[in-house]
Image 1 (tube, protein in one colour):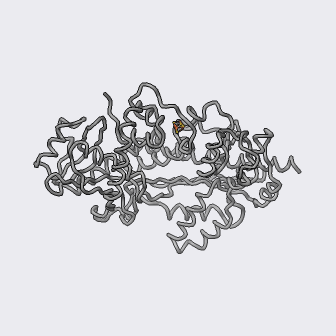
Image 2 (cartoon, rainbow, N blue to C red):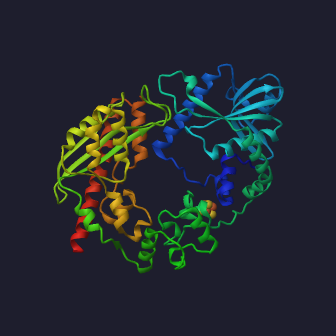
Image 3 (cartoon, rainbow, N blue to C red):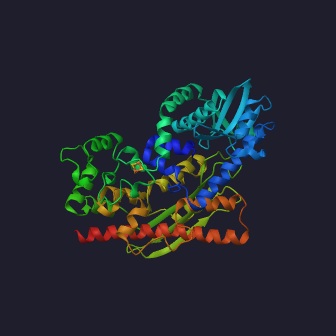
Length: 486
Ligand code: SF4
């Protein structure tokens, strides 16, 4: 007989097929590579902080019976333990490993669940409710349920007592447990069945990690290719049995952009708006192409920084002539041992001069510079001038140019292979933003020696420079489109 754990059960709630696959480890990892390693490391560190806060608690790991331990249950039910970390319980085919249990009195317990976020999320209640249900089935009476999430007020260097915020979820958990108890029997049957529950289209398919191999398989123009499709629109289309853009009824209410995408699909054509020419011509020379990279860690890297703060760590800046020839390339990467944000903006101001458009892809650079203008008031006047020169190339693409091969997206990673097929990131050691951030975090945390730091910095600079080069090529592509459509 198998067991179902919290992850399997929560996946089952969104889709029985997904729960069945989760049980068989058939779901791809959302955080891959370096990013995944960083998350595992941070999780370990956060649990260590919890242990510091409760020095007299017992860690279930110290018992050899840790794995699927019924002995731990007996231990908890005896009066020998007041507080225990990471105890595992099995009951009625469900398995739960709980972060912390603290005895209130007798067999009345306070359950704590640690979360890495810094604000409340509904899914946290689902998690702690599943564990509460398994504990109840094991005979452990949870009278209070608390989520420990990270405090927005904590800054590195403060007393570690301020690291977590407590959120009492007892009432919500009581209700959820009642709901789960009505579902769990059927869930167990479905999940343990040899036959996979039949998949069917629903709103949760949109962000499902196996969509391309499940409901999206062999469907060319799925309704999810319609940009910014609302939940209610998905519900209505699903109720009508519509899964492709071609089948969307003519009188179905779509946004202007969704109509454009639908028309492109029906006519198998590319959309070029009348405004593209004006928008492209409004970009003033000299052209500066700017891309930032950043790092975000749960445990702050530098003194005075809050958990989850996104810190600017590097930039790439290309200045070109009107034909896209690079006249000057500047780049910067922070010293990983300290917070270099001021140095970065000072360099930027110096390199950007006074004139010309600053071209970014998406809005991240504008948001970073705005927050830094707030953070360094003495530089705000210069930084606000920089903001005034920014043009978001993604916005121009999104409003004015659509190829059916974009599949409803406009990110640089989706658009580049369609517009400039000869360009890619595949030859780079670091080829996505998540890995770039994780690589910087590992350097800052002191895991790399000098040789590895040198190599990593070179890889990071190459990755960031590829982003600005991609922008140059996309911009030139749009200039050519405009010139050919005069
Ligand atoms: S794509 Fe949809 S039906 Fe298939 S597993 Fe995901 S949520 Fe379930």
